Length: 513
Image 1 (cartoon, one colour):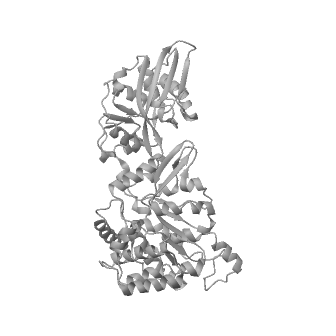
Image 2: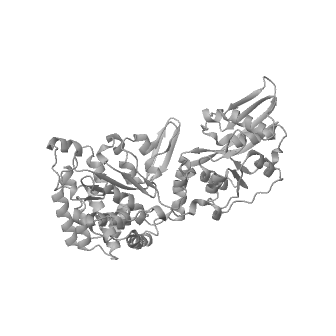
């Protein structure tokens, strides 16, 4: 007897439909044969399903049984097919009425007892069910909390194989989960929150950070060890505006595909903060693998990617950032297929001015030779540096500043100004959904919204010639000027706004050329 169960396969961050076809009662040697390009985890599902059926009071087919995961050209990965395979086996052996499976998308990993464990891609499965106009989704409770955010589809949380069977047979009623029941709209615990008021001194760096967040610009901080670069970077999420619902669903979709949302730190309504170690590989940063999946730049989508000790990263890993910084998406091609992943992130980088770190520290003597300093700085290419909008020096903090008891400006006060600046940008680009901030302005939008007077144009030209900046840096200066004007509540770019934006490019020549 043939039974068909609808499930899904993750391709990148999206789900593709998969039909689990189970045919029992075949002639030949008794056993279960699994086909359809399964990986090792899928092949092992036969053993998990066999034990789960026995411990739930059901029986395995006594005859030869073939299980096909269609379409055959799509690679099937992970244990998410345990539950649909088990239900298909029950339907093919008349232990479950086959018609009860119609209209449901089913996924879930099973333990040997029949209890269900969460799977990656809950939100993607919900979106797929809505796209396919199915009547419902059966998932483990933790994954169902993700799927319910895809409004317009009924999501039923099931805890075990036995509960799923009784629900499908109409013996046990399960109410569809509501978005309010999902834990993903929680705010982080404020008891362990950090705040910008804890930063001592560094007024210029704080100003540069505010501008960068207001316009979603890339930022690089350069200073000796202990000057507070990492401390400031870890507090940037506290001044970023909350994501919109659409942005949060994009963030959650990527994290769900990577499995991050199955853990506590990935279940908050907030923008992501990613800080990979400098030993990360090109694939780990960009994404990919044999079967392409999201990397750190995609996991930081609509959030912050912090690269500490930037010159210590592999040159090849840093160079892969160039195209994603410009386009906000990355396309990965492998033999198993090609996927396009979103990666609109805010880059924040930190580095020392030299290998020992004390080149600009008035209290410590630098031990590095000019050759060592040049070799150290040359690890960051000019094209990558060109794509970083703001460069700011973070000098060592004096003991006098450290001893001050008055707290600095709080994150809430800074975030209020940033939200106002973002509101201006949202209204300005209301007709261009692809442009979400000043950093994402197209060349046409730059000409429209960043016009300069003749005197300002002459000033910028002189700065470009003296600093030997590129045409790309010209556009970056205009974008940063527009953000500074937004923070000041000005409709036009004034000369002080332009001068401040230019000063954030002065390190191009002084440090790297």
